[in-house]
Length: 277
Image (cartoon, rainbow, N blue to C red):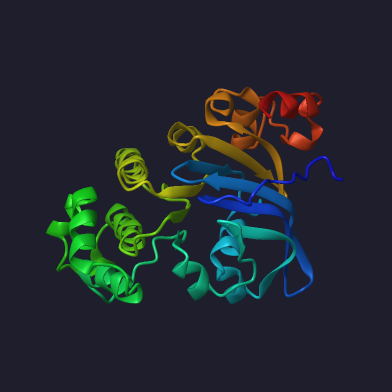
C-alpha cells in the first residue's frame, strides 16, 4: 500500500469518513489521489493547503456537488455514519445533515437577507423556521438588523455571515466551510471565527474547514490535514501542527531563501508522520 494512504475505521455512528478516494474530472483529469480524512461527531477539523491542492474538490466530493463539475469519485469510499455516499446526489447527502458553505460568499443577491435564510429552511422541510431564525440571529445579531436589506448590497463580511447562517438554517450535523476568511478584514475574520466556535460548541455541529489562514483555522480545530497536489501529506492534532515550522513554510509557499517548499522533499517527513500519528 502507498505509505501516503491510510485505512480509516469508519463503521461507527457520528463520523464523516473519507477513505482513500481518487477523483477525476470528465473521467480524464486525476485531481485527488488517495485522500483520507475523518470528522468525528462534534469536532472541527481543518484541511489546509495552497491554491490548487484539491481542497475544494474534497469538499465537493463529500457534499455531492462534484457532479455539477463533471467530477466523479473513481476509487475509495465516503461514509456518513457507516453509510456510503460517494457519487450520491447533493439532495440525498443534504438529507443526511450535510451542508456546504461554498467559497466566494454565494448569496442570492436579488433576495433580502431574511429571504436567503428562509429559503434554506424551506428546502429542509424538517426545519422549524421560526426556531432556526431565532438561532441564527442569536449567532449573527447583525443580520437581524439587515434582514430587509437586499443581500447583494451588504458588505462582504455580512454576506459571509449570510451564507454561514443559511447553512445553519437547515439544522445540519456537518458543515463544510470553504475559505470563510477569504477577502475579509482581520477584525471580520475574528468575528466570523468566534461564531464558528460558538456554533460548534452550542449546536454540537461538526465542521470540516478549508482554509489558507492556517493559524486561525488550527486555533479552532481539533485535528488538521495538509494537502499538496491532491494528496494528504501531513496530518496530526492541531496543537502539534500550529507551531510546526514546516507547516508555516508550506503554507506561505516559500522558504526564507525563496525556494519552493514541498513536503515530498522534506528529509524527515516519514519520521514526522509517525510522531504526529
